Image (tube, rainbow, N blue to C red; front, side, top):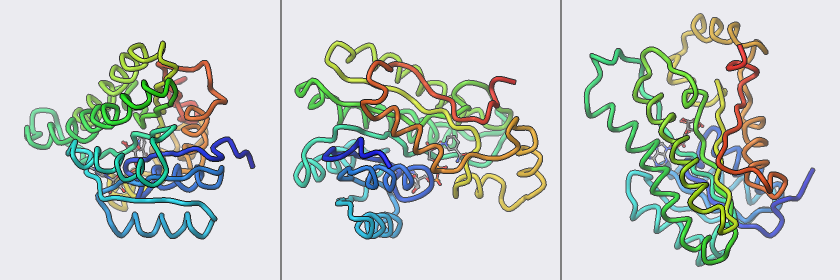
Length: 253
Ligand code: NAD
């Protein structure tokens, strides 16, 4: 196993479940000290316990990415214990139930934008001034294949993820000369609680969509975390302002 994050500080939003949880555990296995933020206290406690079992140090705070104050407090807690993060994974995101564009409430639409897009921007805002001062740092945002192609019934989610890629590219250009890299991962379907909620236990829809993927399966959280860690580490030292699709070939079709 590589130890690319030995001695590094890593901060993750949406760290209590699914992809964020796996990024946290994988970073811990690679030697990182981990700062965990999420709205689920129970989930955070579990991930922190798992990190401790694997010999990794961590600190956590309840952090709703809809609130700049929560994000700033998470960074402050991490700073106090370990120092400013070397790598930030802006991962927190939501996906509501499918709904036609004309039937969606404004509240539901803006909720997706607030968490997925503005929450990512708020996280960037908290991360960057210190990274600029230190002239180093990497940021990886969890976008989606929904940032690259449309999906009927998921307009709010798709819009938020497309806009995230614009945010990633513009921020990367803004900070490249300061030695900071900003990239995105674009997973297709990953077996997480989010996907379970989307299908609501409907095995027929789930299997139909799986069969449409060239690899005939979903991604594992581990496969997604590996890609995220690659972009967050020095292994990708000349990669910035771009995205990596983790999609089993889905968008190559
Ligand atoms: P998940 O729902 O399984 O886990 C998401 C975590 O984010 C949860 O712990 C949740 O409590 C937390 N969260 C939700 N709202 C939050 C908020 N306002 N502030 C802080 N934390 C919050 O989801 P997942 O599948 O692991 O998704 C993680 C990221 O990956 C999301 O950005 C999602 O859009 C993206 N993604 C997921 C898939 C997939 O198929 N699962 C595919 C592509 C992209």
